[in-house]
Image (cartoon, one colour):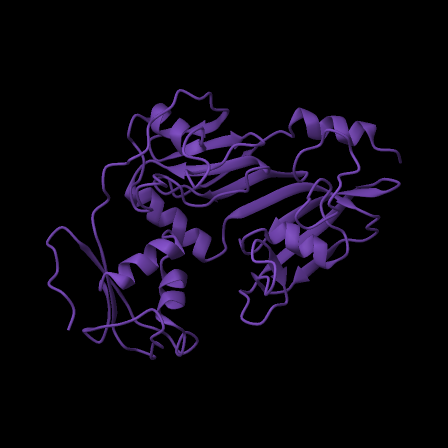
Length: 312
């Protein structure tokens, strides 16, 4: 039997459909609760807060079609991270949402080796505590993230209602996400990469396309300009897997310029740090207004300079 329910806990109930039957409990909950991190869900499962048919279930439990899956989520604790007066490039802000243009080198939320100076530290200061608490102590307001060296548009939520509604759009793949990138080699035509992404079987820091058990991933790309040795492209995501654009472009034989993880170990452009990837456009249905809202982050100066300096 499950442990007694704490009155302050929120109980979430799910019923697996035929497509989800047979999935591991942790994988099912990760799919059903996109606003929670996998590590947070696994912690709840270990604490006995997940049940299948009123019986405590382990992470490896295979869910069955139509059975009741319950997850007890404790109330968010007071954030253990400090607000920091870090300047933010705000693209749009209201009572529900804040869109920011994240600079290169900034980590989105605290992690080992990055306890301060993150976007979350800056948001806590700017929003004065008005951030959703759904995603746990270290990620208040954060619904999605972009890599440390990726620049551009990112949205954070100021209350739990907005968080849930935006997270649902992420789950349904209805949010518009268009990126700009410079890739190695000459791409002559537009195209689509439809290849599942999962953890690399050997290099555990990397993700890889086409690995067994990978999650479905789709990236559409459009050629904007062809240079002598590189191509400037726009990539639009249907899904949002870890390192998706970086992995998919590598799978085509065209890794991102500056990407030392998936491309050449030595960057051919002196002084360039990290991949040339910019989250330009982000669009979603506003959680309160019900209308479509789209923001656009201008290309950073370093990116503009690269485009002007690359030989045709």
